[in-house]
Image (cartoon, rainbow, N blue to C red; front, side, top):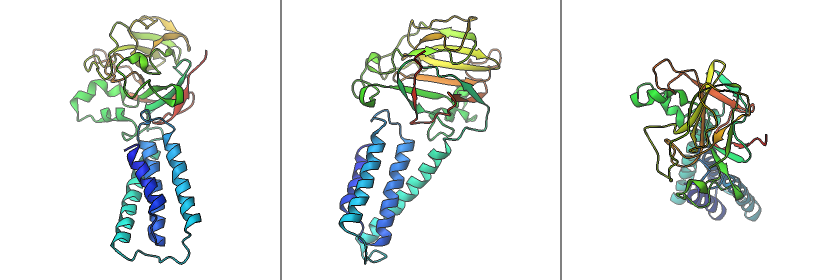
Length: 313
C-alpha cells in the first residue's frame, strides 16, 4: 500500500496517460487525490516520513512530462473505446476514494469538541513523529475507545484523544532495521521524558519489563508510567523504560523536571511514548477511565504525520 501502489499509479500516469481530455484530467486528479489521502492517512514510521514528498515530486514530474512531451491539443473530449472508458472509470474510483479519505484526514486535524489542555513538550533531545493523533479514528486509533457500547473499552476511555510518538533516527528511520526485536534498536528507546506541566505525581510505576518487539502486556496496559495531576486534569505518560522512573507518588514536580525515559513496557508492540489528558477517574475506577480531554503540545494540536523536536533543557 505505501510503496508498490503509489509507484504503480505514478508509472501509470507517466507511461500510459489517457488519450482524451476527460480521461487525462481525471487520471491526474485521481492519482493526485489518492496519493494525498495515503500521505495523510497512513503511518509513515515504516517506510520513512519523507517518502510521500518523494511521491508528490514524482507525480508532478510525470504530469509535466506528459504535458510537455505529448501535448493534448486536438484530443477528443471523451474516450473512444473500452480501454479508454476503463481508465476513466478507474480514475473516478481513485478520485472518489482519495477525496473521501483525504477530506476525513484533513477534518481530523481540527481539535475535537472537548476541552483542550495546553502542556509543554514532554520529550527530551531528539526528533519525533506522531504515529497516532487527531480528532477522528482514521488518524487516531485511540478514538475507538469512545464507543461506549464496547465494554472492554470502558476502563481505557480516558486515552481516547491520546498522542503516540515514534523516534526519528538517521535518514528519518525509526529503527535500525525493518522491525528489530531489540527495543534498544529503536530511535525513541531511552529518550528522556520531562514533566509537561507543574503538578503532583498521582501514580508512578517503574518495575515492569521492557518487551522484545512485537511482544506486549495486554493486561498491564500502561506498563511503566507516570500520572501527573496538573490542576484539575491528569496527564498520563505510558510505556516507560524499566528502572528509569525518577519520581514517586505524592511528589510535586515543576515543568521540565525529569520523569524518566521512553521504553517498551505494557501494551506496546514497539517502543513509543503514549501521552494523554483526562479528568481524574472516580474513586475505585480504573486509572485511565476518566473523561478524555484533548492535548495541545507547544501550542500545536498534533495529528498523525506531524513531527516534533524535543527540548534541549
